[in-house]
Image 1 (cartoon, rainbow, N blue to C red):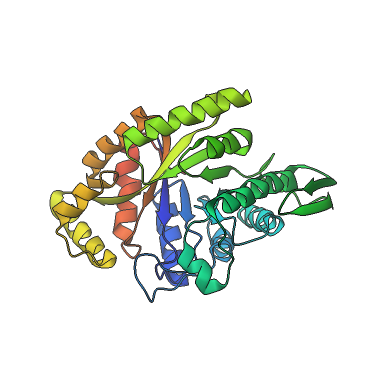
Image 2 (image 1 turned 180 degrees about the vertical axis):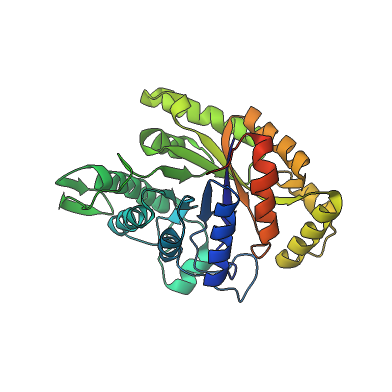
Length: 319
């Protein structure tokens, strides 16, 4: 099982904190660090957000091994030619460690605040589908044209090419409904589903398998990943302490047991207990887990994931 560290960057993560997070994750052998791509806080008001791709570019220059990506960049934020070039730039700065997560966009409030259009779900997915095609073709084709409903490109050759060939891994996000699964079967190297239980992941794995079969693609070539919150400790006392800290961050008034009962997809427990919970995802067809570390100032938890959890789940450690 591959493990990625996922940070909600819109929740007031400062540049110094980003450096500490990335360097801690890298020092403790975590393979990849992903960040959300939002401009407005979700968990609480008054929290700032540095730009996702500018952050990754800075981290790329100050790290050596850890892979870096977004989970996910919304289609409503940027022109696909710009997004493709941003990812290529981070791939060059990092020496080939960039990954691009893309989605249709969902957070209406931040669109209103930033002045970004927020069209219907159908319209956003149409944008998303065209963007995915343009990004991949920008990375791989020469002198291509594109004439869609939303974007038109003429004689496009995007240089330089990414360091990773044929291009950086493309991760598409969603719930594996038929149209989303079909898009992933055509273009993606990974499909990520957020906040899903193992049972839901098994259903979504089946949907991806059907889409791959319909597209003439080997289903095993399209891994499924899941993103979910993780609260981990060396012992029960440490777990309880971290859980209480997280509830304060979330502004929760319910007790911890009630919150956990309402979040069956959360990974909560000692390292051994979380490893068992991850095994249920493996059995459901998941090949990578994005651990949402919502208390981003807790660097000891990041070290614990690398030092104690990775060996238990077979995730290994980067050298």
